Length: 132
Image (tube, rainbow, N blue to C red; front, top):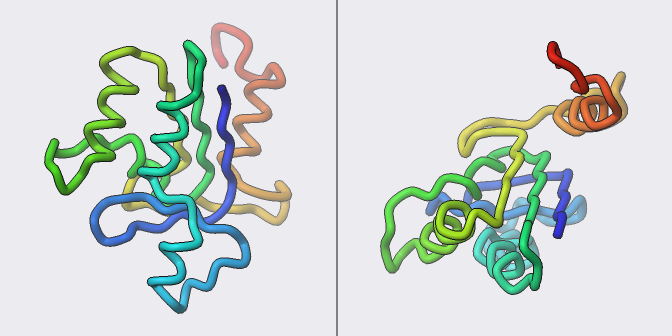
């Protein structure tokens, strides 16, 4: 199962990632969180996928939040779920363009996200070798 997202990412203030569509209104925080793809929802979809391996590729600001397991607590159930998927059964691999507090950048010259550009370049053979 492969999930790829290139777009906007935001922190909800509780160290939870929310992926936002191009038309999400960021001026209204309540609406932003209710119309975006929340970290918990994404991880639940991955958990429900009937497959042995799962790959998540995120080219978005703050995308590393989804991989940061953090403290186990009732307030952060997504942290426990991420830990189960990543560590316990080894079924989830995450490629994130940025850490939880970093931005991901686009380039007009490259025609999109810099992370995506180099990911495609690497998958197309540029990283196929001992020096790649």
